[in-house]
Picture 1 (cartoon, rainbow, N blue to C red):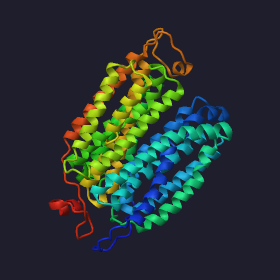
Picture 2: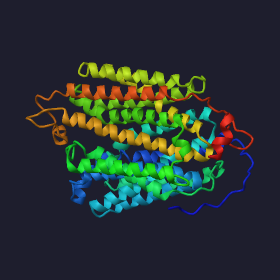
Picture 3: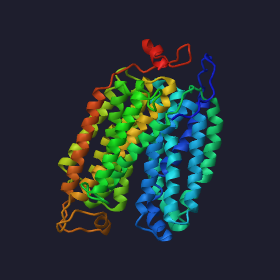
Picture 4: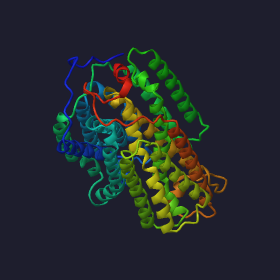
Length: 510
């Protein structure tokens, strides 16, 4: 099953002139605003959930308001990356923004909970399309040696969204109306549409006439969705050994097998074989899966740890969490500078992972013996170490593939990182919710919300959580060791494509 080819382009086109600094700033401003909208929507809803449940008269389905967005967000990421390789970054980013805006309006107008859940799923499709295209645009703008510096700016945007999302969601819900958390996306989305439409007209184009493997894309999404549902529901909504969870896992495995068969046999598979066979892309994706997964998992469960184990007040927990997020951002900035200063750039992620491993090992060994200052210092240093992984994994993957494959390669990497986050959060949740024995029962979310729990040894539980995180970072460290250290390209060849060295013709042909 295929979609019509886009209009064919002339066989030879002149090499695009390098973009000037002013043009790069315009493009970066537009895509950062678009990415901010996508990231903000993952956190702004949380404070409004109880109010939304009461307003729509359905508290039981509230988890789907979050899950529907994250599921479609993750599934859409590689699809839009591929589409941008075929039809161009500008067109597909505008389409993703338009879907996001329509979904936001539908959320605000939803008369009941099922309608809101469907609207959130639509909104997630748009949000998931924004992220890979924005990262790919950076790959189109500048040579690989300079990309990490620009990729680090996205870390600042994500940190701002992580901090401002819950705050803004609470203010709008408490003092105005919960629908404003969705209505606010319309003027911001319209501004992002206008800015990206103007700026991306100046972006060099690398799209080529391809066919979209619709069947392959459908099989990949059908494989990912039940896996993410199983990871989200296992241990919380259903026991891990229950029929619903086992059924979802079986369905995921079956669809992954079908997807693999489709990739092997399709004339032009959804993810090109040249990318799947590239060891550097595979190793980098695995490293991103584990490292970014641990970062997202810790961001979710650290506030619980601060309050239940260390006894911090909500304000104290907020301080340490901000230190953690700021350190992640600082690590991204430092990594973006270091990677351009040394040809042995693998030392940067390896060193950062060692720092993260030491941090988690210390937390696992001494989970209950930290003051507010000690926790801030430890998480600050460890967060800076882990922060190097986000821009570097993107840069390494984009340095490996040809320009016309940047979209699908970047989308596949973002998909792996998001999937790693989903699975890691579910695994950490299983440790916390199942690791405390209270009256012969495991800990539940209702018990956590209830406050004090006599006799619950949370320090031991979170010690196991940090030990699990340590193991996952060790796996990321091993994956980085497997990455082939290819020199970062710093220019373009005469044909208008990045200088890929002796393999240029082979890679471009694929």
